Length: 111
Image (tube, rainbow, N blue to C red; front, side, top):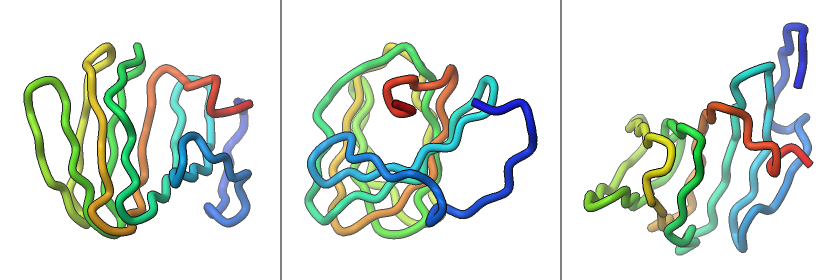
């Protein structure tokens, strides 16, 4: 968390593997957290839920997302927003890079 302006690049941020094949580089402000996420080809994030709102944009590649009863394949330039507590998951159909935002902060990503 920070109370000052931060200007950086993903390469300068700490990398954390949050699931097999999923690397993130988190950057947290006081209330919102950004996460630069890289998913290897075929990497799946199992269906889960959390109280945090989660939104993002695909910077590279293609990802199949499911949330509740909906399934969507999203590609470079596509965005998503998932309300807190909604079960969701994803699978990278090929290598993918996303920029995600979470509110409130995902403290477990910052440890």
